[in-house]
Amino acid sequence: KVKLDSTTDKTFNGTADVTDIGVSGILQIANGGTGNTTGTSTSASKLSTSRNLQVDLAKSNSLGFDGSADATSIGIKNVLPIANGGTGVSDGTVNTTAWAYSADGTDRFTTVYPHFNLGDNTKTFVGADGEVSSTTGSIMIGQGTQKTQDGDFNYLTYKPTIDNSDWFRFFLIPGPEAPNMTKVTVKPNTKYTFSVLLKGTGQHEIYAYKGWTAPNTPWSLQINLTSDWKLYTFTVTSNSVIPSGSVQFFIRSNKATEINLKKPKVEEGSVATPYMPSASEVTTADWPSYIGYSNTLKLGKGPTDFTWTQVFTEKSVVPITNGGTGNANGLAVGQSSGAQLRYFDDLNDIATTIQYTLNGETPINAPTDAKSNFGFVIVQTRDDSGLGFAIQRYITTANEEFIRSKIGDPHYYWTDWKQL
Image (cartoon, rainbow, N blue to C red; front, side, top):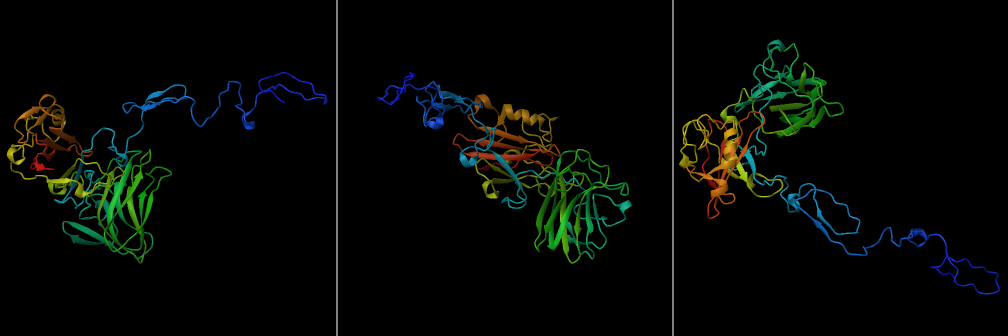
């Protein structure tokens, strides 16, 4: 008989039983032991002593845990999504804005304010089929391309008679053979998006040419057209070195197909925003005429999730009592005459220190006079023009919530107050 707590040797000659035989060495895990002399298992179904774990939502640190003591103040990582009960943002802001060209928000709905088109002459294509040396703007089209008026726009129709016909070109940097065409500064290592409305038949291909896209990234997009107008988008990443000429997007079509095209646009970034002319061609009518505001948490918000207000573009003064500024220079109430809303620097300061009452006449010092969210101004600037926009929010003592908005341009005025 073996005695597990003994290491004594015993002699056995077969004449009698031997008891209290000692053991030597360590019983390994594979044979049912612990593999050590401390009596501690390397793994267990539970701790021998229960421990408490506590998460501190205000911290982001990691914390080691070996079971020897409680672990408190465990930090967190990333942002809690809306689907899991969070806001989905890291700045605590749930207010969102949208833009549209109709009162219900369905016409060209977008949550990203439209960027300017980097190209000229994308509306009517006047002269785009002329001699290369005299062509202006950004568009060059092949001979035999038909133009058809569609409201304020023209759309193009092309029916190739040969294969591999490169009939439509949108130049960002033209070559020396086209000295009068628009030249754009293309940034290295930057995303650019080409978008266009197309319909027709057959298969066609959009190319980013020549050698200006980053290596090992897509530089062509194959598309199959239908009889309905559809928006096609193609995003590329520019190379670290940009060629000095012939930087363009072009469309290649084959015979026995048809292609119709309108509203081509190139913009910086990976999102195709609604069509806009270039900065040199834009008019007041081209800007979105309605702004939407939403303070609800929801994934994939659509037009019905926003409260829409019309953007005033009248040249006359809109009185303060009607939601205007009460002046003709586009200034917000309380701004000095030299501080135009167009650049938003002063309004940004005002947004952090002074809020306004419902009629816009009496300033309130938010930290001392206002309850939470009594007066709140959102100020955002746009990437490509510095115009931006502002949304002013007002909550009455009866918890009635109102908003109004203003685009940062002297021709735009505060909208009417609208109850949410």
